[in-house]
Structures are given as C-alpha cells and as structure tokens.
Length: 414
Image 1 (cartoon, rainbow, N blue to C red):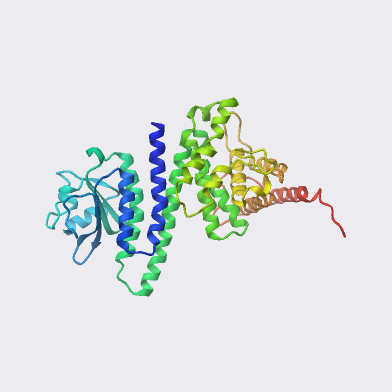
Image 2 (cartoon, rainbow, N blue to C red; image 1 turned 180 degrees about the vertical axis):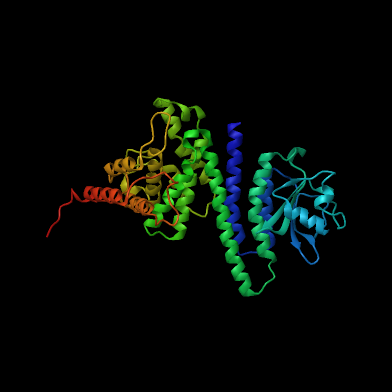
C-alpha cells in the first residue's frame, strides 16, 4: 500500500511539473493539447479522454483533441442549453456520469453521444466556463475512485488556463494583459498544489504537521532578505515545501518513538534524503536546484551532515538556506523526545553553531526578518500570531552576537 501511494504521489507531482512548460511551449496548440490529455489520462488512469473548448455564441463544446476513443468524430460538437452551461459552471470538480446525470450536464443534440463519457470536469478560469475534459473508460473498466478524481481535478486547473489562453479573441493589448493575469494564476495554482503536497508529506506524525510549509515560508523570507530575485525566491519556497518528500517512504513508527533512534532506525530515517532525491530527480521542475536541495538539506558546513558529508562551499547557497530554515523549525517545534525551544533560544543555538555548521549570511537574513516581525513591518509575517515574543532590541542583541562570532578570530592588518 505504501508503495502504491508513493507511485501515485510521484505520478501526480511529475504531471504537475511537466504541464507548466507545456503552457508556454512555442508550438502548435494541438501538440500542447495532446501532451496535456496524456498527462491527465496517466494521472487518472483513463484510457479514453477528450478535451473540449467552450464557445458562448452559440453555447457549444468543440473538441480540441481526443485520445483512445475508437469512434469519435473530429471535431466533436456538443451544443449546450442554458441549463447545461449552468450545471457545468456550478460544478466544483469532476462529475461522474450515469443514466440519471447525462442530461444534466450534456446534450444529445450534437454529433457525439454523451454516453461515451464516464466522467467530466469543467474547466473554469475565474468562475467562467472555458471548456471541459471528458474521460471515457478507465483501465480495466474500473470505476474512477477518489484518488484518481483528485489528481484529475488538480491537473484540470492547468488545462483550463491553456484552453482559456488559446480561445481568447481579443486585441493584442488585451491578450497581453490577460496572459499576464493567467500567468499569475498559474504561479498561484502551482504554489497551492505544492502546499498540498507539503501537507501530505507531514501527515504521518502530528508533531510535524505544518513543518514543510513553515520551512518553505522561512526559506522564502531568508531569500527575500538576501535580495534574491523572485525566481530564486520561488525556488527556495518550493524546495522548502518538498525537502522532506522522502519521508513518505519512512516507517511511521519512527516518527512516534519517544526515545532516541537506534543505529538501524537512524539509518532508515537518514535515507529519506536519498529517497527524496530519487523521487524529485525524475521530475522536470521549473527550478533545477530542487533535487540537490532535497538530497543535501541535512548537510552541515563542517562536514558532519549527511548523506554525502559536504563541507562549506561544496553546499550551494540554496542548500545552506534550506538547511538553516529546516533546523530552525525543528528547534522551535515539539518532538516526542523533547519540548520545543523558544524562538530566542533557537536563534542563540544557531548563532553558537555558526559559521561552523550554518551559513552566517543566511542566519543574518533570518534575523532581519525576525526583527521585521518584531516591529510589525513584514508584509507577510513569518510567524503565526503568538509564535514570537522577541523585541527589536532582543533581535539586535542576537545580531550583535552573530557579528562578534564572525569577527572575533579575524586578524586586521593596517
């Protein structure tokens, strides 16, 4: 069961990562449509699928591409009555079709019989119908189960954006403006999808719920304070969400053990970095650093980390940032074997181990964001309400301590 769930997770992550570039590929849209249909079919386990665009005047669904159907006209046309448009627009996700629901969502007045389809998912952009994906029979003629429908719905958001972009019939200036808004929607959906995966990664143990989301938030804050460009910051946030993805293959009981892990258990837990690297290496993310971040987020500057015992500059900057964000959240979160540390105590401990284990520049950036939280100037606070009780003066003292550690051993020559 664990292996099956891991394969499903990987399949959907991979499909999500692959669909992003498909939307902006410089090629005929029918090639893009075929790639999107194949991704949807793979994720949902379907052997038949069709993609339709929606036109308002008159209200009609027109096939863009289809796969697997033996007898499907090209193009397939399904005229819609107002009640069909209303039902499709009101639907909140994929809808299973049967003899009692065909007439609710589709008409029989076109050149294709609705009975060919077992499930439809309306494609909507900002609440407006842009098209429909219709699935036929599933592999082995099985029913579409909840996990398949969830994957189908997640991928449909991407397809909706592509269909909407394809059918825009506006002036050049309007198209540019609309494309920018669609791109923003795409990035927002990508974030939402990865947040969902981060939540799924942490679900094994109540004491780490929210860990991956917080690591992503801390890493983003550190990157912004270091002046990184928006693409690099987005990469850090996404890597934070996915850094522990290898833990889906770790025995749940290890997360609940109230005492120290033995040697074999520690080895199994440490293997999550390698397993995670294997998972994300099979996915073409928009951010090429994600695999190395997933593998190396437990490395330390003095070579005491794992799995490869890297030293200092052998660790890319993004890896050092995620390593710091991960350690900071681990320290300030409760575990079965210890109580959580306060924010101030955790920062003191990180300062004590810098620069030997942690990147002092990343730590300085974290202190900048903590101070902004303390005085209420952060656009997006990095701590939840009540999560931090340091004053600006406390943070300044910590920054001074860090600076002293970095300069105390230096010899200045005049």
